[in-house]
Image (cartoon, rainbow over all chains, first blue to last red; front, side):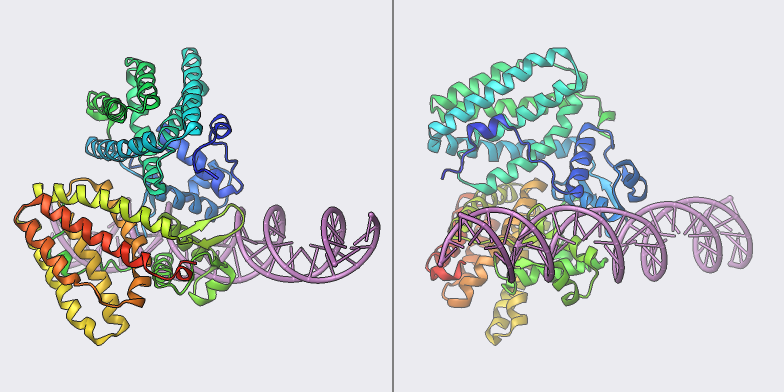
Length: 237
Length: 237
DNA sequence: ATGGATAAAAATCTCGAGAAAACATTGACG
DNA sequence: CGTCAATGTTTTCTCGAGATTTTTATCCAT
């Protein structure tokens, strides 16, 4: 059929239920690392964590290995696992690479996307807008839902890009940037008018104005970099 | 210090000795998959492979997980592991994405590379040329050494690119394309004058002619795609 | 003969204990 | 007083067996 995200997929978010304990532990761990519960550079001792996540040693090991795939955890030879360190340089790199890939993908999406793609974009934007409303409550669940829907929105935007590899790399980079964004959101919760930026992207995309859409998207992504740049250096430990 | 590959690194190739059994099994498996010993789509049964690679079940499992990182193996929920399938579409995607990343990286390398980088490039090209001579013997070892030095050459070319992520993604894509290149080399061993192409890239790079260098590099990469396109379809099973 | 359901078989996933390696502390020697 | 070496502790890595799930084969009913 087509390779685009269907509207129902958007509605269902990314609710692949974890079928294995290792994957469940993997998701929990990933969330905890992105949330900052495990600090960058922290050692991840299997003996200590296997109780916390209620799985066996080998299982937790597998979960950690999966996190190495996402580059959220680094494995050092015979010296165990560690939460991937963060730095401003790294985030600059992530951001610029993301801009490179995401603009190319968006161009192709705008060029090739069909009605189904347009509907997906509109739907994802709607879901995101709703989540923005609930964000007023200030609950953790609301913020988490917003994060997820924001991710889906960016994913759907480029879902008509025919390159699976570009989309794959974009996913990885998005996960990475999520760690940094949490840091900036913690300090200056809602300074930017993110909604307007997203709206502008959607408008330009549906108008098939690739140049305008990529321009806004680039600024949109770079703005987060600026926000992180203004953070106190000690947060990037 | 600097982040470039040192000349000695080039000489030493990529000889990180595997310090763990899992990593050793991972490398063997990776080589076997790229070599085509395990065919695309094949099921990788842990029970059967753990004897073949002389490791425990859990260890082999870890090795397989590492291969998922390189996208050479796909893991399906509770249904075990499988060699990643191949297709012409996939290789087109890999190639185009590789061109995108590698040209950007080469541009930056040419712009930012210092004397050390130039020396690395010359050294890697020399190593590759020597391997080309030995290629006449037709031994497996010679071809394998050429493959490795070709990889190093492309890696060193973009080693002055400051983006670790671009280089990381390029590594993954190179590994992928290696699978397909083996297929094409099997049929038409040495039809192209690869040496001249590499020489032209080196010349343009050292002359700091980014436009020319990226142009040649792009053609160079695309040529392999054309070679694979001409393969009989049944090889892409 | 075809389709569905049950049961046997195979493979995967999970767990805990033993072996190997790395780390930290302490003591001795120059 | 500083450096080096040896020892003990901690942590990681590895292995084989048991529990779940998937797959295959068989059998009965339509």
